[in-house]
Length: 381
Ligand code: ADP
Ligand code: MG
Image (cartoon, rainbow, N blue to C red; front, side, top):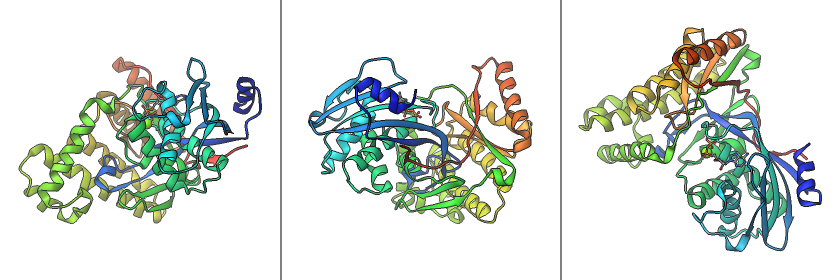
């Protein structure tokens, strides 16, 4: 049954439209977002799909095909940040709250959704959920907001309403990515450029390895890295590490006497530089050339930022042993997913090698799939 048909069966009338928003995977540029640096996400083929209708009585009814439980009913004008709005329902409810808090005339809605984005795998199932809600309400309430404005409101929903301190990369990627492209996002001014990344045309594939190890970003490690970066910026007399040029890095490191802060600064400044190198290579049509840059990025996350884990390190090492051009962990770390760039002809060999390596190590079997650079949020019916 389609999501629209499920909506009809659930609420007893047909939805006004159906919208889809993808999950994302970050190609390179990790923990650079809050340093006002650069990231490079691409949209996954996996999407959250929502059938929605506007309600002018202020009632918000939310249902997910993927979660056991009844329809969550909330009053749009009674939404309060960080109040328990019914678990998962806090994401779409947070979007309604953020839109209203920004002064947009949004009332109620009926929403039913179903998502193919793996949850908790660092692939932004939460942003897909927020962005699909924001896009639907933008149309149904004729708000005329741009994708960038919708992404910022979705981020605000997650930060202030749900209570997760994420940057804006996930929502921007879900809202604004294009098929066959990777999004070069400047996290200082949210300037974007769609960089060609047509893997199929180059005979390449990007594999995602979901380790099935679930990260808990809230557990302090993220906050600790963030505080360390802020301390580094202060010690170097800049507002954000983005302002330390790569050419100045050796000098900057000499000025830092805290070994831990030095490692964090080296990661952030070098990862911003790796983003620039990847952009230059892709612009020059040298897609294979980015492989070694991805691998360097992994070493930096493992050894300097220290946010990797045995499963991620094994995914990267096994992919490379089996012929991957490059691989790295992606996302917040301590679990979640890795990406591997492979020749199309090697995709099955690499998948098998990673799966076997996990079995030999006694790890939970990973989920390996292809991430074809896909389009961002859109209306589908
Ligand atoms: P990630 O964004 O990396 O997948 P998060 O912890 O940020 O992980 O978001 C996952 C949460 O998003 C889930 O715990 C759930 O509350 C919500 N969510 C994601 N997909 C769905 C879905 N299909 N139905 C209901 N809730 C969902
Ligand atoms: Mg998330």
